[in-house]
Length: 470
Ligand code: GLC
Image 1 (spheres, rainbow, N blue to C red):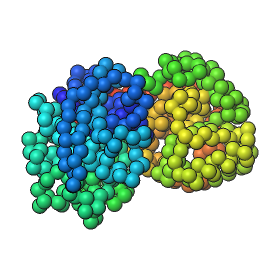
Image 2: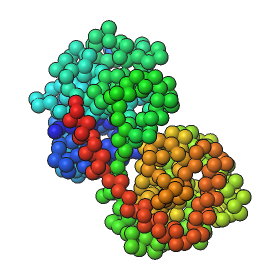
Image 3: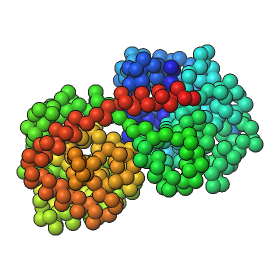
Image 4: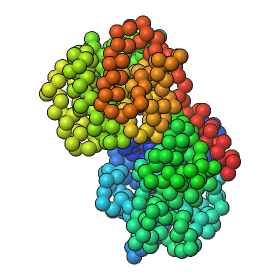
């Protein structure tokens, strides 16, 4: 089968979050299973672009309202990623340093999607399935089916994977002229609540819709940022497939980002050495449990609760643990977290920004990873952590609930709580500190979680099963 994935992100070329990790791994595993999976994303101006070679494979152009855009499709020349990576270059529009965050993001991603559809319509042999990811690619099924110029794509099967339904790609109706000429009586396929809603359109038009965990799919029926009714109505075509992790990238036995490599047999020693490096670097106490948070500092991740929860934990549990934070996001949360650096010196530190190498070192050196997320469609960090023997402390939601079992249950290996509140977090931190004092238990849990199979093989096969049905 030939599959083309369309996304805004693909690791290592462009990553802002988990979407990039998934689109950088899934195609590789689909290829390993004997299929041809390709990826197309916008050409941003990133380091990867300058360090690798690309060939021009197609040039074209299209009108968008009263603008004309020329685009070039380039292909990475040496298959360094384990799949063919194609980039859409649109001068002055896509070739920027950041992936998102510009005032004209609507124009940028609409143009990207038109270019992709235009390009695929010119392929001599069509792919078997067009697999689009999140709202930045979710207008593609509509365009393939309803745009006059692309009628030759109207019967091609499409899959939409939702990594996060909080963001939906809303567009004012006055921008409907951006789309290439389309059958106007089909407007209902674009609309939700008086605006064009790219994600809702994708859910309606795609042949199948997947979410990145089964638990998240169930949640969407009552918590989908306004699209609850739609998910209830379209439930027949929706399937939850848990993400995997790229076990070639995330393996403590071979990871070159970390100071000391280790495996299940020498996990305690390996982790202790990595912990010492981290504690020395950040002025923390290696004898106490080290709890980390890695992620975007936004409401969805409940990062706003961290400053209070950390302060309370350090006061009430009497400095019985260390915290280390890595992330960026909401400026007021960043500020508060940085303020704590001075207040709790020796027990706490934070690094604002994102640093792939440090993230790996933190998974290797930490004892616990905290994820109090209000919304977590899958969550990859808890799986990375477990692969590195770091015990997850998670709120029971979405993919976190699907992947972590509380130590109070039979064969449990993590710490789970119900509410995204300061109280539930501090209570869980307390449980973690107690668990840490039971050395034998910790050793056993580490060994257990490092061996859980979170590999892509399984999930990659499930996607292929979905393609077969359409
Ligand atoms: C988004 C979700 C996250 C998920 C990731 C990859 O970033 O917030 O939960 O793991 O996509 O699917």
